[in-house]
Length: 489
Image 1: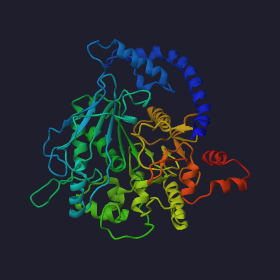
Image 2: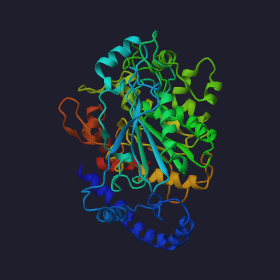
Image 3: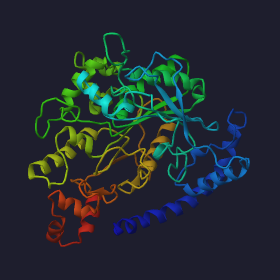
Image 4: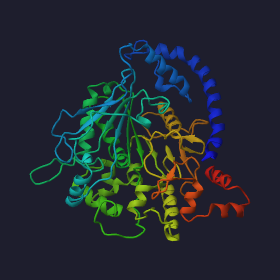
């Protein structure tokens, strides 16, 4: 899409100018920042993760300088996260193998990012047996690699991750199949353990011995089932730290693609497997099977029907910790459980209406969420994608919105966002255009049969929507129409 680069050019230009002005502001601020930190335990006086604005170039220079000062014997800084199995061997994956986590420590930083992996779930003996045959790495640690490379918000590269690249990175692989909610060990009577919630608890206990006790910020993030897991566990992690006396650590949540709706399927199907089972039915069965645990305040609000707490719009209002929500308005996993399968066939009018209604329904549930990034794209998961900086809503990228949220919470710790957002630093970003991929910055779509890249216009035609005709009626260029819709005109 040649038009995309041209559209973004003015944004890039503004970014550079803003960067220079910002560098001047930064110089003025450095002296007091240095004084405050002289006596602190940090290994260098400047905390580069707190640098404001789009300072990509500045951070690249710092990284190059650090690498050039590093002993010549080390060819490159070791950037990968390394596997550690939990010391407490009673906390396990589904099959009884030890649970664990990957970590890349950053001794100069007081920011910690814990990421919960996603990957659906299973909800009874039959679906779990089938998952064990086809997706064993999501139920067992026996074949996990020794290292993992972080991407997106887990990347150690400032070019890919401008505000969090220098944080302590922790990736917890998903091997409990319970949306991170279970507290049930494997016994002689049960075939599988479901201990997702306990795995998070144990990882946090081990990280306290590695410097988390000294942290300023802990961001519990996750994608898909991991995003729902972040919503279910963020308050528990905050309480766990507070109960051990670590009240200075600000615990926050980041839920990516985990805000599902308990809506009616396009076509009703029996609950035979994970993908065809209606969202409500799968979670009702699963939460019983896993012995799933939900936040106490949400449990009180839904006594006897605790499964409600697995749905973002129902659990979110009950949470005490600040949470940033990232959600595609047309989430592929949601459409899959709703029985809309976008394979080679153009969609029927009924499906097209259902898809548009889904976007409207989702918008309605997100209206009261102050910290939000919701592009009108057909996709699933974003924060660990290497292209996560390229997606924009109303001219703002997700890393920028997260940075604005971060700044807004610095003076407002331990409470949900109360003060109005700073000028030029929006945090409630939601597309207002009505159909999938009406935002020109959406990720590239591929035809599921041929694997060929499709332009937005090709995609919308494939979906049965005639952009050309609509544009002709309006007397304008199709791209201009898409751009206008994206900007909420």
